[in-house]
Image (tube, rainbow, N blue to C red; front, side):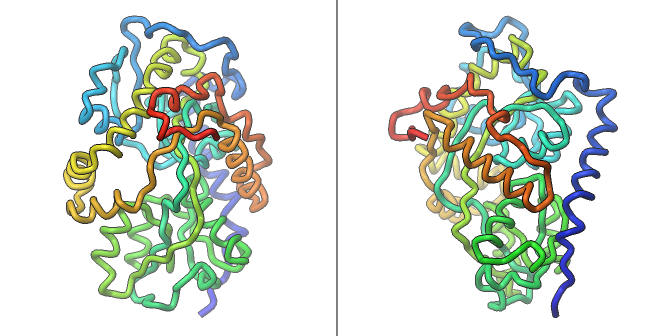
Length: 355
């Protein structure tokens, strides 16, 4: 059966819906009159943040890594909370609602924020060289969908404001397919599992450990994992522009970025402890699956220069704009390069890359 393409209906409607929802929060959120380009250019403060400085940090893995490694004792400020927001649209709303000062996401949420005029900037970069997402198929699909070329005519879960959305677009492009060759079903990534289980969609990009748990439950019913060469290059830390105009909070972020990078390295170097703490106790997968997931990952990399990250972000923004999902965006303006190199300088040379 050929499904009628809906790609043309997704971009503007879902973008406007997100923008409208954000606007409702503006009156009781951060200063909506602040310019989206109002990040100061003065040098970062070199000293410790003043007493009483607080940050709300939405990076759950860092919370566990810092606690497990003892690096949390080196924080020179108070973490007022660790909101567990992971989806880009949720983080954007957290920025608007003044409940998040610093978050971690892939490269697409900052593009989405810029598109709806939510001021925020990237303050740290980690890169990867392997695919982060696998395309899971719905129960009953069996071997009918064996590669991205088989996506033609299929219903694909699509979240334009998250990394998974760009992974879908890149996979289609690499398979020689146009967006109109498939049905893009607009959903937040938190609903991908339910959509697959109910066969609302035929395919959805899943990351670990969600993929392992899904295939463990539905593999016997014909669900499969379809791999591609699509790499989601960036993990970024980013903060609202209002926060970056607060010198005390900027000093706190400056002190946090090196500890964040060191926490990532600690998890890589203490596999058994990290698997138990995160995958088993926090995510509910078996130790064996946790070890397999970690073994499939590549060593952390922190670039000394952000040139490649900026170029990648521009390519992503152009891809989104070409599909009509966002207006044309200059990606260079999404980065606060005052923080460039802080993460790489904090880790051993083997975890550093030039760009």
